[in-house]
Length: 108
Image (cartoon, rainbow, N blue to C red; front, top):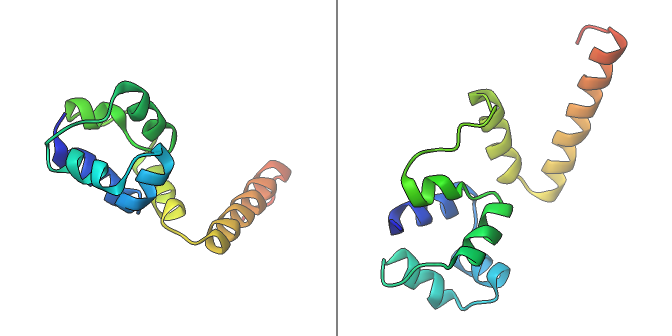
């Protein structure tokens, strides 16, 4: 598993090595070892990371998961993930309000 992609995903998500260590119940040094290429997460750990937003396919193969996500949606999601909790709440309120307007037929 290429260590640079694991580190790239961690940084893309705005997580520190300590954040991942706490998420996975390992030491920060373990994360550093993975990123240095000295060891790698097991499949269970990679699954936990995937549930937290890591593109596991990209980490393992170098190919991004395509899904049905547009570039605009990816940008929105990245900005959401890198926002504070207050910022995330504001983004959600705005999105709900705009969607409600569309449902009601009101132009935004």
